[in-house]
Image 1: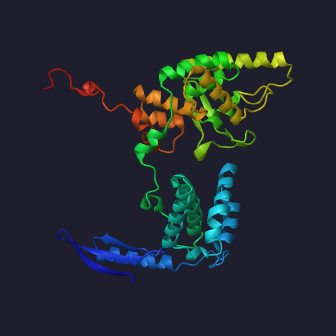
Image 2: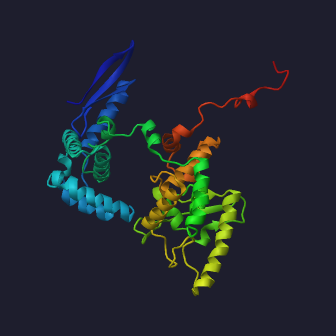
Image 3: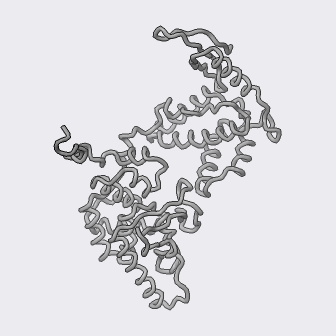
Length: 381
C-alpha cells in the first residue's frame, strides 16, 4: 500500500514515499520534508485515479487502440510501414486482444525474452530485431499514456533492463568508413569507371549527407555564392526512389557548410547539367540536382549496386555503402581535430552524444600541446 515513512540515510533524516506504478513495480522516492513527500504521494494517487479520455473506452484492446494510434500518429511513410509490420507480425498476435491498461511490465519482459530466444534458436543474433519490436511497443504505449489510458509506460527503459541497448563502444566499432587515402582512391576510380555518379559521391564524401537527403536536393537548395556557402537540407528521397519526405530524419532541416572543393564540384556539376540537358534534347531541366540517365530521381538500389562495382574496380572492400561516405566525412573531420559539436550540426544528429557514441574511435585521445594556448603571459608568475 502506498505510504510515507521516515528514513535515515547516512545520519540524515529523510521521508520515503513508497508506491506502486502501473507496471506493478514497487517504487521509492526520498524527500527532505514530510510535506514534500505527502504532496508527491497525493499527486501519484490522483494520477492513478484520473479520468480517461472520454473518446476512448477504458478497456480498449491493444488491437483497436493500435488502429486509432496509426491514424493520428505523425511519422514518415517508411516509419509507418515499420510500425505496421512489427504490429502485424509480432505485437498484435501477443497483445492484440488484451486491454491496453492490462499490459504489464512483467508480461512485456516475458514476451521480449521469448522473442529473443526464438530468434537465437534460428541462428540469428536477435538483439536488433527485439530492439525494434520494443521500440514500436514503447511508442504505442507512450501514446496510450498521453491519452490517459495508463499512467506509466510498462515498456519504459526495458531495453536497458534487458541489456538490449548497443554499448557505446560497440556502436563506433560497427561504423564502416573509408580513410582519407581510400576515399581519394575510390573517387579517382569512380571518375573513370562511373563518370555519371562520381561527382555525387565526391560531394557526399565532403558533406556528410544522408543518402536520401543528397538524392532529394535541387539546385534551389544550393547557396554557393553566400558566405559561408551552404546547402539547405530539408527533405529526403525515400528508399523506394519515388516518395519525397518533406523533412529529413529527425524532422530537423539544417544548413550544411561547403568546403572550397565541394563548391567547385557543385559549380562544375551545374554546368554539366546544362550540357546534358542540351545533349539529350530535354525541354526542361530535371528537378533533382543529381538525376539518373532518364532525368528522374536516382534509385538508391542502383546507386548502391554501381558503388560496389567501383569499389571492386578500386580493390576496396565491397561492404562500404553510400551511407559509409557520410561516415567517411565525419571520421576524417574528427581525426583532423574539428569540433565535435560542429560536426554534430553538420550531420544533423539529435544530440552531441549521438555523434560521440558513433564516432568515438576517431576522436583524438591525446593532443600534445593543445593546452599551451591557455598559458598566462610571461611574467604572470
